[in-house]
Length: 298
Image 1 (cartoon, rainbow, N blue to C red):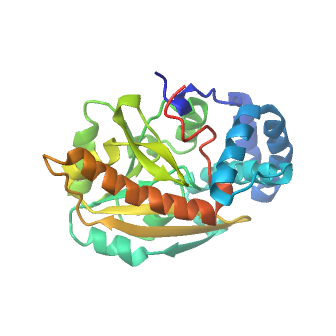
Image 2 (cartoon, rainbow, N blue to C red; image 1 turned 180 degrees about the vertical axis):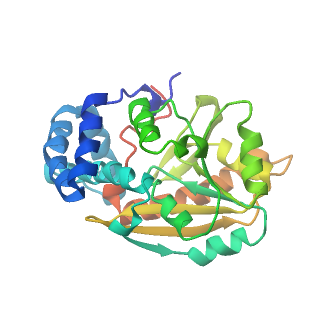
């Protein structure tokens, strides 16, 4: 069966993406942000399926359904983080007010000399993690992801900053684990998303916002294999140019026992799911999984 998020069709076209980027670079962020309003209105009217799933999410997170203004605001938050990714990739962090809570947690994890796994999600912006790297001299940051998702956007961002291609590790390739281990052995950071399945047969079911939801098992299997500290990362967008980064230690080392491996995976994943739920309620408008997260597959 097809995993739910992979079944979604990417909206937008290459020409409009390039035009928006040109405006953002040539005319500046305030002008580009003004154009987000008609763009978000367009998507609000067109993406009916995403609206239905967002309404279900709001009911789980807040106990009520959102009105159309809240839905529009949600789309605008998402569009804002996509726009800001352009500036993050160009290293323009000075345009943003970014607060980092838990920086000592990351420093202590890296002090072990084993590198660090940075466990993120599709809540808020993961790209703002580059702001963490900008505060550290010569820190190597790689991101492990499925590049088949949103190919138009990913191809464009590669053009904006070709160095991104060297920092992205494609899930499932033969040399991926070697590159992950090489980065960690050098004391670097490997970022990974912990909230989307790559395949249906690699799911562990945890309680999330009051209902059972599937999470990938590969995250904890990887952490067990590389024996590096795991730090959870939540980059919340707070409107305007403000971002709040939260860093929390999940474990100095994830160990999965031979006889209770699946139970251990579920236990560690549940801890991550609990923190994801916590921040989802704090920043409900930062939830950017625009599909029914609680359904394993179509």
